[in-house]
Length: 144
Length: 136
Image (cartoon, rainbow over all chains, first blue to last red; front, side, top):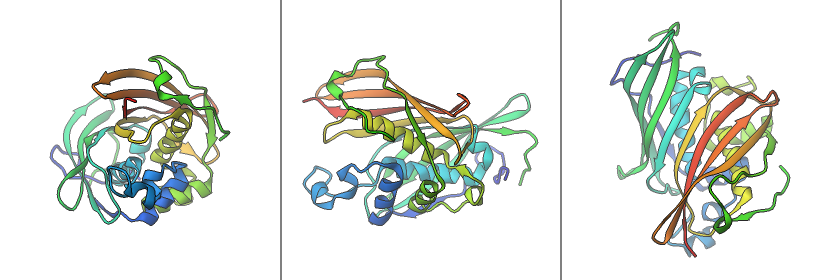
């Protein structure tokens, strides 16, 4: 699969919308091996300053990777770079919108380096993750 | 992954290396991961390809297993480079080392470099993870 977006500065990436549910968090704990009680133990989490369970930051970050895979296909899997900050927790019941756009494209020898802004925000438009993603795309990719 | 002894985070030093951790990501783990993140991209269907963030998650598991972190620890930032694809048959080894420790008031900022290679010793993923921890 090749690039699915128009390689042009300003192009929006295909947004991903996720309803955060405790069962997804529990599944992620099992798949990742991260059983920190702040993610999976409601009684424990209620007594912390967070006041309840929160999703693993890496679970939300996986949605960014999902968006980049959807946009850039296999180029993302071997040539993708992520640099993000976790700004706020995502909680069960939150609706997270993952969005992004191409900020800059630099032509190289036989490839293009595509630099994207990425953002995960919740239903209150509060940023949960901010950062950038870069992907090296071959010049022979199909263009939409 | 075998159980490893944990280093108390107060004892960490910049430059400190953790023992390498070997792991495999089988098809069941990939399937569980895809369900958890609700990823249905055809690129992962019956191809044997492992999502790079699944590799990242298991590399972080190795790190979490190596450090005793106190309640209140916050994962503040993350960098990853996905260098090469990973398949379910691959055996991966994660190498982690403390990049930086900074004290900021009542908090410590700890950054750890992670490098993952496959059974041919080819790098597949690198990254830097940063945590803020409360000073005891």
